Amino acid sequence: MRVAVVSGGEPGHVFPAIALCLRLAEAGDEPTLFTVGRWVQAARDAGIPTPPLPDLPLTAEDDREDLGRWQHERAAAMALALAPRIAESRPDLVVCDVLTPGGGLAAELLGLPWAKLSPHPLYEPSRGLPPVGSGLAVGEGLTGRLRDTLLRAATARSIRQGERQQAKARLSLGLPARGPGPAARLIATLPALEVPRPDWPANAHVVGPLLWEPTQELLTPPPGTAPLVLISASTAAAGAVGVAEATLEALQDLGVRAVVCTFGPPPAGLPEWARAGLGRQDELLREAAVVVGGGGHGVLAKALVAGVPLVIVPGGGDQWELANRATRQGGALIVRPPEPTALRAAIRQILAEPRFAAAAARAAATAAQVSDPVQVCRNALSAR
Image (tube, rainbow, N blue to C red):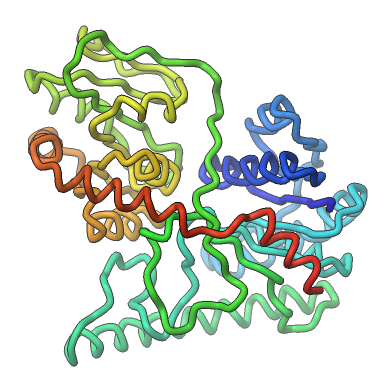
């Protein structure tokens, strides 16, 4: 099976796409990755065919004041640019990241089946949930159900507007206003982070986190036996800033060791009980007692898969939603903004109370309940 995998260049999206490509290749299939940005060479170094792409066109006006229109018009323009490039790889199936809908449109233009990859929980609206992004649990009792109904009504207008903009973009490509949708949805998260809903799509499959380490470098923690705190700087553009610096201040005289994992320059003036740089987080998590980081799905999933609880400092995007889900599950605490006193209290609480590590271990155990993403892709192709 030849599979074209389309992803944007943000680490939180291209890393799971690379992980999926590697899983496909290990199973004997032939993936080709279509992406842009700094991780193209890393994907090639991992053995994934990643052809160069021309500059992908945006809309003529490029007006972001109406974000919905901008996204759908950009997706249509990208579909026209991507379709001939995808066709060159002669795929049987196209898999597109949730933020690159142009990949799905390109597949339709080529007459190919396609699947959607969500590198996080399922975020589609539901008649049984409060709007995704609110961070709210499902309302209980008459008051709670009324609250959720009112919140859904408040977002319904924007959803309908987005559907109209999507239909207009599809018609501009000569496609029907309403498409068939993906043949399958790969929900790349832990079941522990999902929320039951009455309208779960029949073709949506939780496949577990698709994790990939962008480096083979090992970062050695400071020597000693004190608890290790792993500080993960957010890779998301909407991530909270100053987390590493505030956490290092919070850890002063706490009797711990710390490692700051970052793609950027390390914080200045590191104390002797701290190290910083780029290193494999999966290796560090074997020793870590707690993780401090943004609420991005990547670090959250890595920590919970390793059974390590978190102190989460959520930024924008979906980080508030994820942080609240992890907190309700029991494996995390939220601190916002990254204020040293609050961070210190949260870290001390997690280190002192075994219930947090126990909850993280329960979350890790749910990985045994997921579907095989390779088989989901094969089933999507055979069901055509």
